[in-house]
Each structure stands twice: as structure tokens, then as C-alpha cells.
Length: 234
Image 1 (cartoon, rainbow, N blue to C red):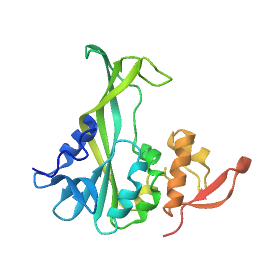
Image 2 (image 1 turned 135 degrees about the vertical axis):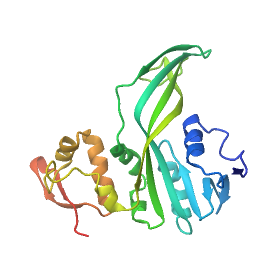
Image 3 (image 1 turned 60 degrees about the vertical axis):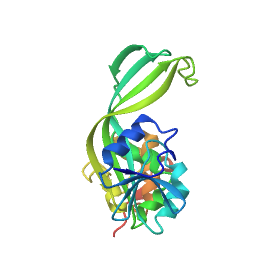
Image 4 (image 1 turned 180 degrees about the vertical axis):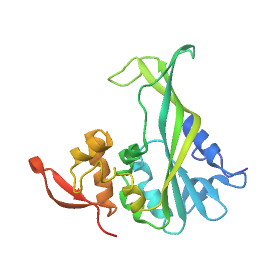
């Protein structure tokens, strides 16, 4: 596998990002290659640029918009359908391992898509979601968050890729809405959250993204002045 300028963009690379990139790359691909002034994770011979992003999409806004002007761009985002938590001491000693009760689902991609929903309308842009099994490493060193100050999230590790799902256009993103039998048309965020068994906050992000990419219209107000959404006719 050809690697170009491996020192660029890899100094702070976490295990999950590196593992997904290695899993996704083909032998003929180039890694960490400079394209139009930006370092791209994977460059494929058919002029496909692949970016792996394990967290927020916000830092990639300018980069993705610039690259899609002249290239096909695929953004790959892993979501943990199953997570294991490994706890270690500050000296690296394993303290215990357990399975997290939290299970991610493909709709979680809307948590990050709120940063770039308009790109789903671009013919050169594709969003690919990887449903994975991962291991989260937590270190007991007193440098964690305000909520859990004793434990710091040290790393995330890829254990297995379970499923790949590509969203190539707004229609495919809108297909993640529940069917008419479960969700009335039109509907509110609360009705969406109930029908899809989502948190209300995530339902709101979902409708925001779908509106921005032209897959939903606001058609009125419902109970307690809640907005009513309907899918446009393409």
C-alpha cells in the first residue's frame, strides 16, 4: 500500500480512526495524500477521496466543501452498535472490562450531520456509516470530565465492522424516517421521537438536517405550537 507523507495528519491520530482507515483502504490506495491543499485520509485511483471522521463533522466543513468542487468525496463515520468498556490504571494495568448497555443506531449520524446537511444535496458527496463493535478505554488518572473526573477516555478501538450503509442523496436520508404505519404524516418532533424510539433532541436534529437538505417541509403547527413536518413530493 502506498503511503504519502505519513507524518502529516497522523501525529495525533487515535486508534479508532487509524483502524477504520486501514480497514477501508485497498492495496492500491494512497494514504495521507495532499490534494488541493488538504491532507486526505485515502485517495483512490478513480479520483475518489475518502475521509474518516470518528467525531464531529464541524472541523471538516471547509475541507469537504472545497474538495467536492473537483472530486468525488466519501465521508466515512463509525457508530458503535456495540461497545465494550475497558478500565485501566494510570500505569496501564487492566482493572476490568464490561459491556456497555448503550447501543448506537444509524440515526445517530444526524448528531454530527447537523454541521453539513446541505452537502447531502451535492452529487459528488456520499456519507457512509459503519456500524461497528468498539472498545472504549478509560484511564483512572483524575483527568476526566466534570461529570466523571476520576476516569478519562483514553482511546477507542475498532473490534469489528458489522454493517456498511451509504447515504448518497437526501431521499436515502429521508428513508430513515419510520413508515407511515408508525409515523403520521404530517408529524411533529415528539411524534417522530415516539415512533422511532429516539431521544427528542436527536429527533429534532434529524428533522433539522432533512429540512436543510430539502427532504422535509414545514407545513404548519401542531399541539403546543409544535412544528408539523411533511415529506415533499420529488
